[in-house]
Amino acid sequence: MTAADKKPAGKKLTGMLVVMALIAGVAGMQLPQRFFISLTPSIKYRLLWLNSDVENTTTGDYVVFKLNTKRLAGLPIPVELAEDQDGIINAVKRIGCDEGQILTRKGKNSRDFYCNGEYLGRAKERSRKGDSLSPAPLGGVIPHGKAFMSGDSKDSYDSRYFGFVDKKTFVYRATGIF
Image 1 (cartoon, helix red, strand yellow):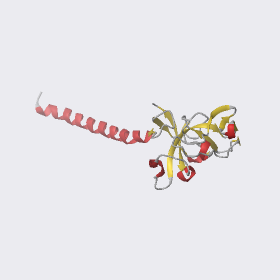
Image 2 (cartoon, rainbow, N blue to C red):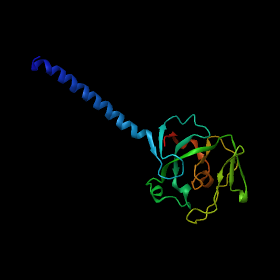
Image 3 (cartoon, rainbow, N blue to C red):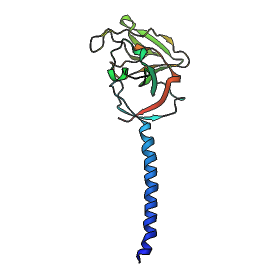
Image 4 (tube, rainbow, N blue to C red):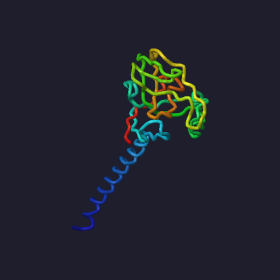
């Protein structure tokens, strides 16, 4: 075999490497857009896989949604969340009670929240830092196009405090990885 015979194989190999690099580059640019890293212990997952199918979400699904930080006024949230320049953050919670379902409150000062009779959680009187907390004035049938968002932690700042979320603000359905 002469050196001339080896050149076409080298060119073929180089071409294959270029194509593989392009495919890896495109995949590498797309994959980070498919992951969400939760910065708070609000939900049980730290890494979630994102899916753009938000039309078919239902109770129990995790959802990334846009939340105006003005709705969090008075809540002792982490500083990094409050510093968004537009006043909008991407939050992730689980749909605890969906449109058409019945949200009720019971217990001391009506701080226990239930969806169709299933316990969702208690709105605490004080944060872990001792700040006073007030539950959102919610109850009854969840209106069309709205959802009650729940965290997995008793310390989660969720719809118990900031109220219903408009489903138009849903950006991604999220599946927990770990």
